[in-house]
Image (cartoon, rainbow, N blue to C red; front, top):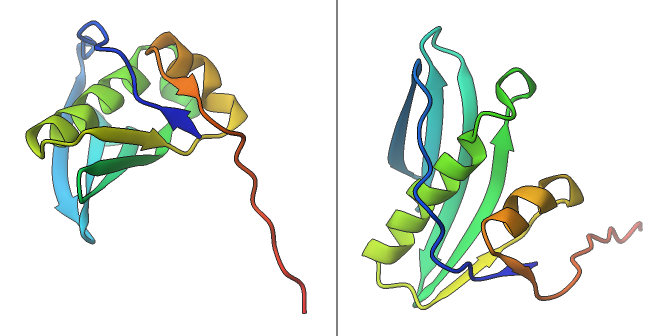
Length: 118
């Protein structure tokens, strides 16, 4: 689990991509769409009682290394800012660690998932 980021620099959306943020299922989803119509990157945020949880930040393999993850995080953070959020949390995989650390997020605690087999 990652803790709040310092204010990062503004991410630039590369040419040939568009981004949208929509309310969905009680939260928000940011989507980066390539000119071909393909989903290139996305992420979700849930905001409640002064907290925001960022989740499912994904950049499709064909669109990696273009800064799209940073664009998604920036747009989700704008949702949190508008909602007056004072606490930001991010549940992430090890694969996303470089992105989050580059955006100044810090690890607060390791996250693990357990399954109870009956």
